[in-house]
Amino acid sequence: MSAMSNFPLSALRAGPLGPRLVRRRVPAARSLAFDRTGRRYPDRMAFALVGTSNGITALDADGHAHFELDSGDVSRLARSTRGCWAIVGGGRLLRRGDDEVWHEVAEVDGELTAVLPFADGALAGVRDGQLLRISTDAAEAVSGFDEVQGRENWHAVPSGDPYVRSLAATADAGAVLANVHVGGIPRSTDGGATWLPTIDPEVDVHEVRGHPSDEALVVAAAGAGFFWSTDGGVTWTEHNDGLHTTYARAVAFTSEGVLVSVSDGPFAREGAVYRWVLGTDEPLERCVDGLPDELAGNIDTGALDASGEDAVLVDQGGAVYVSGNTGLSWSHLADVEDAHTVVLA
Image 1 (cartoon, rainbow, N blue to C red):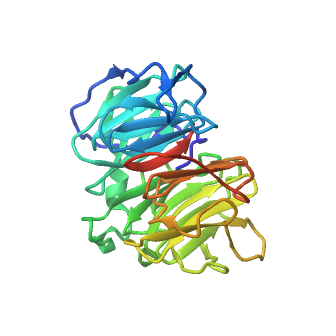
Image 2: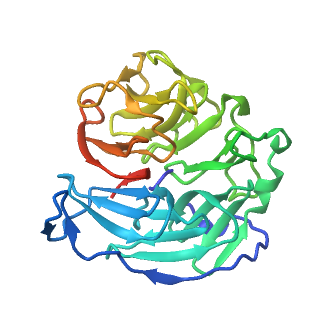
């Protein structure tokens, strides 16, 4: 999910939806943090935010944790230039302000599955395959998304009907890309009025990301491996050299290249993370320094994030690992119970 886009949300063409919307301030669960021995310490600047079944845990750079938001299940976190966003309890969308307080932006009927923040709101995917435009006083269906070419070929996965699993924008905000599971990556360059398919749906895309500063670069993690694009997501190239297995679930940009997670399949007990310097002929290189031989389960969509030289991941056992050198080496930061998703704060 691109956090750097200034794509004008008002440009998206929408149809009436009419869900129930609420707006309210959501207070932080605690004003003081506690280290892992239970000792109280003054608030520290969060390095990463972890979404769990019970809310959001903030971690500082030394691994000290405090429970920042008591909200129920947090299924997805996303970064933006105006704070972090969270999908909570299925249908609630919250934003973390500069004051580190969470504010509810909207509550909609249906289960939200992905969020892409913009300057004046957000785009959000819904479990039933819809795409919504959300602002502080409205939530509307992006009508053009319902007419995307090839939509009739989208198909169900064991977890249910096709749905928007992740969203991204190019760095210049000229294109929006919606990763449908399973339905490829439809792309729009006219504010959502029309969409065109860009990749074979059968590669089974799990996450799409736009580069934070280069509008030509877009990457995707898919069941068929790692894919990258040098034309803003119009065409795609597979690059799986070096991978021990090609089932990929998450991807993120660093200042040097990309990180991508892989495993043996959707129910894998063990996973791994690889790094690649974009545009080189080199194979992807497995990240081993500071990581266990096998991470617990899949590093899933939304469970890997990076910005500049910093990176963070959480495995399905709740272990959080961080890197300060684009994934060359890692260290264990903390263990967070029932963790689903993580972002750099």
